[in-house]
Length: 297
Ligand code: OGA
Ligand code: MN
Image 1 (cartoon, rainbow, N blue to C red):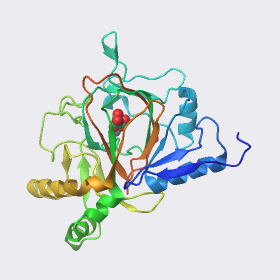
Image 2 (image 1 turned 90 degrees about the horizontal axis):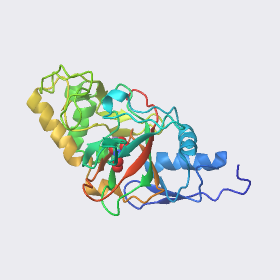
Image 3 (image 1 turned 135 degrees about the vertical axis):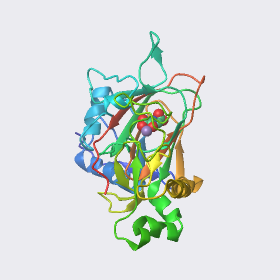
């Protein structure tokens, strides 16, 4: 425990979201320093701590301060890998050993999404600690979903909030059976429909209220497989396309260019993220933690 006065500084990126936390050691910090970090995450939606030098045990201990750690369910992952010393840490990587991937997601593009939106309790926070990064490529972008609400046409915001004058807002079904590449997930192999109205998945509000800030955020999950229950298919597709057209305007985004030792924490309850492909550009290995979230309301 540090005995000196806190030197933690929050330096906003200047974009619509994101801030650097400076003068903070995630392996050794005082409670009031952690309070500053937690507050910065709520204010800036994504925070970055550069130049960390912590092992996986310290990473897991730090992550657990933010909530209950919960890795993604095995059925959502191509090859579940767990670290012996830090069992909540999983790996995002393109590296293979003995012909087998050591982690998830390879080297391709990941389209805009929020983590585990297709489950009943989507992840609250996700943390990535960069262990290896290619010289270029594999950048990760974030979009501010509070700002997305403001970017909607007022009529559209009204339709989401009080469809046809009703009190309950519109929802979206986030299909669970297929991954973003369209492949059936384990446990769902017998489902062979490509009609989004038929696909199984949880239904969540399109405008969700952040449980800590009380602010409204647009909650889309991902474009693939989305359906707005109660609407004709064509109407659902058109409304989703309209929402997606303003969900990640460049002025509401910020892009992280990774360096080894960067630790990024984002709040899935008010952001989306995507990743550039980095095929042929080198090894990339991220150690990852997620915290359990609540059912969106
Ligand atoms: C994730 C994710 C992006 C990246 O871990 O949920 O989307 O940059 N990762 O690897
Ligand atoms: Mn993700």
